[in-house]
Image 1 (cartoon, rainbow, N blue to C red):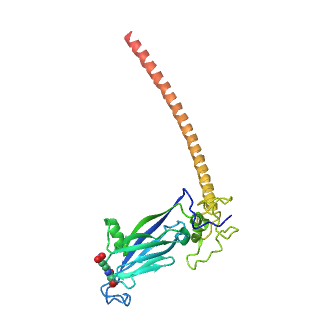
Image 2: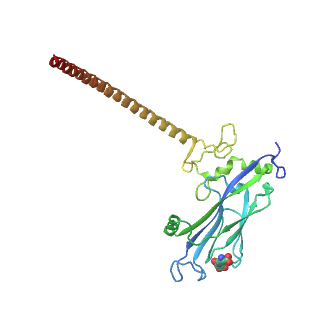
Length: 279
Ligand code: SLL
């Protein structure tokens, strides 16, 4: 099979990816405070970070995203900041918000031109009472937007990458050092097991879990078995209750019948008394 090409397009296919573009801002300790970082201009009141990242659990964005440039306010030193690798983010200090131009550069295999996005660096509290209270409590003002990047008729090479199973491998990596943990369930190709045994591509859960893989087909099967047992228990209890109800209603019917009998006798006696008085 020939290698997937970076110049041939896959017809009638469109693949979308979500990204989060956002910023976080924190208050700096005031001038003279021992915790205030050194070298920060006196008029700076906030520390902030602007970032581009994938939503938690989404396929890795480096599959298609090569680098990100952030064009910050032009009074900053070197205002065009380039991130060649994740995390795609810039941290600075300042006093005011402004609009940041963001350039998304795609992987060369995509054959796509860079795309532009904008993000307003929100430093001050905003939103409804609840949100502002949360911002007050945490000391952090976060402003995030979900953006969609669409690859219409992607190149063969990009399509291959965007449908490959290793886009999720990062989820199984240790939080620090990026080393694979021994608990990770890997297939013969060294990749985490995903998808059906026939190798069909999908977002299926891995077969076995581990420390870093809390959700797996094995875990799912266990949960289902536990739910079944509980459902059987509930069925048993329901049956018991139904039997009790049957017994109670039988008793009730017997009592009613007795009462009916007595009432009929009383009525008969009364009627015969009436008749005798009439005579
Ligand atoms: C505007 N909102 O768009 C204003 C400008 C600039 C904020 C805000 C410090 C920069 C530096 C800073 O926070 N500037 O130290 O270079 O016109």
